Amino acid sequence: MANVPKVGEHVIATVSKVARFGAYCRLLEYDNLEVFLPIREVSSGWIKNIREYVHEGQKVVCSVLFYDKDKGTIDVSLKRVTQSQAKEKIRVYNYEKRLTALFAQAIKMAGMYEEKPALVQKALSEFTTYTNLIENAISNTEEFKKSTLPKKLKDTLLESYEANRKKRQYIVAYTMKLATFNTMSGVTEIKDIITAVKRLGIAVNYIGAPHYRLVAEGENYAEAEDKIKQASQIVQSKLKKGIFEIEKEKLKKAKEDILGSTQA
Image 1: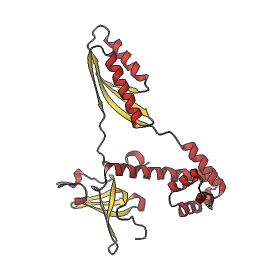
Image 2 (image 1 turned 120 degrees about the vertical axis):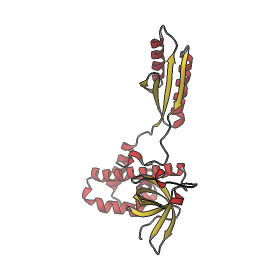
Image 3 (image 1 turned 135 degrees about the vertical axis):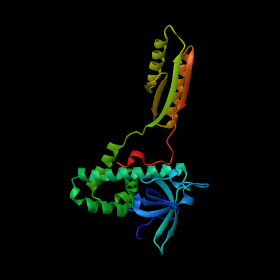
Image 4 (image 1 turned 180 degrees about the vertical axis):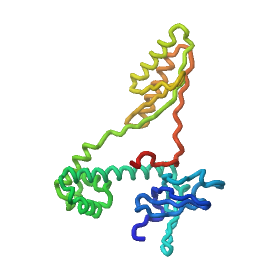
């Protein structure tokens, strides 16, 4: 095998076939190279039914466990990758995908579409990844200055990067239970509370009495969570007598189709 991952490397795999003693997967970053996930490496502890943990078409982050050069086989492990490691791998993978598209866009904008194959080969031979290329371009390193990529393409690439760069927003969602015992002006009281919460920049969606969904955004999770905290304080101060409960929405299973909608 000419292009194979290293032992210990984290890789993104698609489960292609589930068998009794493990699952066959294909690596997205290695031209769909087939690897094997032994059942003992799926999860810690005894597994009665492997299909309770993995299924065909599922995207997972694994660690390369073993590479048999003679047989040309590769084993991977799911249980040896932590949730934080999986998230970081997905972040890096998705970022590289975005920059791949950005480089293609820059080539088109620079009027060099017919030269695309040669330019792609040159960029990857000099910088290995588009992430490395962009980091060198932003810092205007000596490596970037000496790159044989056309100056027009370099300038267009930086312009495209700046134009496409958006401030990342972090989102938190909560379910709120809100009811008042005020029989005289309860509707007005609830409306006043909801209006005050919305002024914080929180989206409030009515689910069905007495439940509401609160969605807050921020430049980081702390900022988003702080908005929810402020909302709670407002509700408690304005609700004269009633019921107020708030609960953070639970996330889906961490390793269930971990790529989600990023496979567009």
